[in-house]
Length: 353
Picture 1 (cartoon, rainbow, N blue to C red):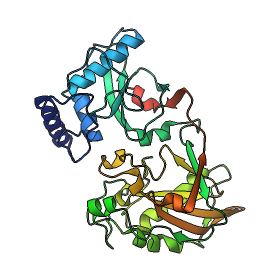
Picture 2 (spheres, rainbow, N blue to C red; picture 1 turned 120 degrees about the vertical axis):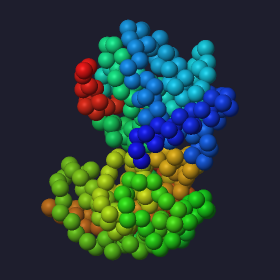
Picture 3 (cartoon, rainbow, N blue to C red; picture 1 turned 180 degrees about the horizontal axis):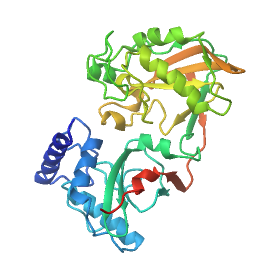
């Protein structure tokens, strides 16, 4: 989509919000609402409205945080309240489902709040004089900026009892998935990180049949401590087998958004589940809130590492809704009261012209 088209669409949503006097503390909008800002709409509109704004220059940190939220509210068509009330367990700006941070450095600190996979994090990038840029990140995608491991291991699970071997846990997809995406035996041949399209998404049974031939295959191991790179080997082949025309990975959940498939490679029994339990009915931010976490298909590959190779031993495929028919949940690590994330330093490398 061209930037001009995205800006026009974002301004239309803003006008609808303003004309209908949508309350900031109303229930969060979803993508089937005319009041919903998609992430790229948020980013292009806020860039247009706020880049170059000097209202935050020289303010104390607390005052700056309040003014930053006010600026974002007004840019999106909402009436900013005199004071921003903290909503227990929810985003500070509930209807657009966003939190706002004003940053002059790449160390993002989230205090006294769990990172929420559903909400969107608006990052206003500042220099000493003005807002220089705006970035919008889905909560589910913040894990790529976590260097401590505390964010990505909130929930864990393991197969029940002596369960082993390959298994298709879910015979059919969730009713919401079927209603929204009308899965069949045809898959999209585009990017794996593109939005899933109705009629171009495989049924879960077909996903299983396409991925199961990977069981028994042996792959070169990138190294003992290269867990992420090892997973990329499997992720890349899964993309090919599910019909993607190329490999892409932008750190979002689920890994293969176009097929709503999350890919995991396991050398141990314990599965790290990230920020949301698979059977959660939390709207999926990466799919613009139209689908829930429980609609995602989890493809878990179990493998054995031997020297410089690893071999896939089995595959478990399940919808999030059925996940705990095969797995038992147990507590993992939780985030600290102060969670520190390292944002890309390139975001803060802008220079005044």
